[in-house]
Length: 312
Ligand code: NAP
Ligand code: GLV
Image 1: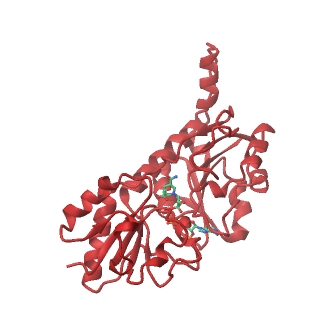
Image 2: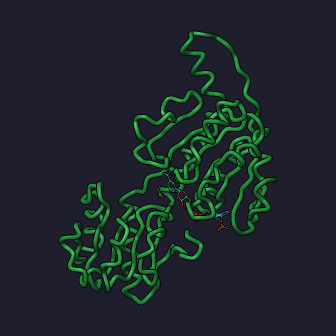
Image 3: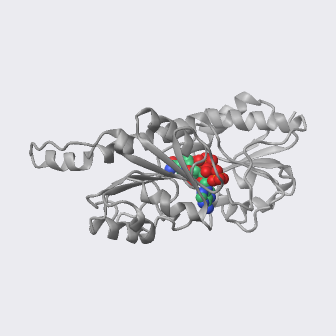
């Protein structure tokens, strides 16, 4: 029997899509969906997505916070977050599958020159453009964690040449691995397609900048499906306009929704998608929440915990 109530705190989400799953899994759990319904002392569990700064410090009996996303930058950056409360993030096969599909789709898009072919179609022009063999295309994944490694497995099956960059050393069969600051330049030098799957932390903010782009081979493409804060948008536009970069796919932005006036929308070498690369599956996520609540009832710790010192 869970001790305390769960608060669902994700403004803008249709809560019943999420909470109905949880009610089925733990019928006896007291679920509150609005802050007004939640007497601070009652709340033991919280499901959160981009809570307002300060929102989570109101609950003295909070035992765990479940982030509805894999990325926890919006929560970790809140200096008032009560750090003794464990923060559990999404690590889920359905999310990895979604991200893998997105990365494979856009890797193929730039490798197979779909942007150029689409422009030719608009002009009713029949011109054959030969694409290089996949085994000569080097895909570099910035952030070689759960999602980066899942995408790499699928890309390897298509014969791409893979490399990954992480904070700590990794050994993954068939993948060139690089780590730390000293590993970044050699990693970039051999990335024809650069995929960003880093968490947003003070160390990674703005990492997709002019200096990084200059270190990529001429004609490289960039796929950012991590966070908008990784990218210096003006630097990307300059690198595309100079012809150094061939194209970019952007799923995440400094400001979301992307403002109508943003030059990114209409840039001929940019594909924009509205933060849809991998979306948390409500049923699967709530299974994780229910399992964790039951684990904690038995005195076991929650899983997939964020390390506040690292920021992810
Ligand atoms: P993860 O498992 O924590 O992996 C993060 C990777 O980044 C790890 O390999 C880590 O290195 C590396 N890293 C972190 N800081 C670094 C640094 N300063 N230098 C070098 N490498 C560093 O995270 P994940 O589950 O793969 O998720 C990655 C990100 O994807 C999330 O944080 C989120 O922002 C984004 N995301 C986006 C969407 C979308 O729809 N667009 C959906 C889901 C997630 P170590 O392995 O050495 O720690
Ligand atoms: C989505 O952006 C996530 O972090 O899961």
